[in-house]
Image (cartoon, rainbow, N blue to C red; front, side, top):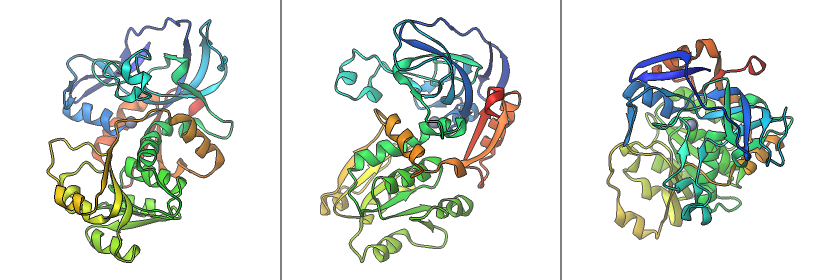
Length: 348
Ligand SMILES: [Zn+2]
């Protein structure tokens, strides 16, 4: 089976890789349609590691995927050959203590596509548990299907925030995750979301969505903008989606008394933050790690038209040019939000 392989740091190839394709009773076999290039894939390519996860042998990249079911296991209900689907890339142990608590995303034994040593899905066919495979509504494209994975992170953050109708939110960081978090927050009832970053092109794209106010940190002071938007009270929810240590300076000054701060971005090194400022407001601090039980909600919002992820797909590359997609992603162009790879001919 051909696959897009990270051989070692800085070296990609498209070549045959032996990948298991036996379909167990609870599995489906899927012809992969679209796969999004994620910041984590790019980081493995450019740095060879993310924290404790080190690429020490060739690994197939890709975890944001949609496709079409081509075979179903004997015990599978609710999915049939021909169904268009998207897949949750993490497979937890459903008998684990974390899974039984509903926290399958933090099951220590979760097996996640393209997290060393687990192969990803940039290959024409994959076998996946039906329990983590979701049918795409007819009006949701393969491109949008492959956007559900990053959007699910924004959804998890919005769920953790316990948003209320009319809330004003702030999102620090206007990358893919920052934008999808703002969209999830708006869908969850926020009246307005201020999104801050240093990248003018990404801010301009985010600002095209009704309800999103871009704040360019090169020109504007975020705290002043929040005070102005909230009559000096502070934002109901602050989502930190950059992972940048700089974002933690003054973070709690943005939130209203009794408000929430949701930490989404993963700082590379430990970052200090102002406990006293958090206490002075009795701020609630939430963290997220990936997502659990949000794919059906995410798909329902996309199908309803309340969330439009299509403008975030900046370019699509055919599978044979997949390496070019990674090179371009590594350039970090300001105008690129999400690059995707069309693995099947049907998804071009
Ligand atoms: Zn991703």
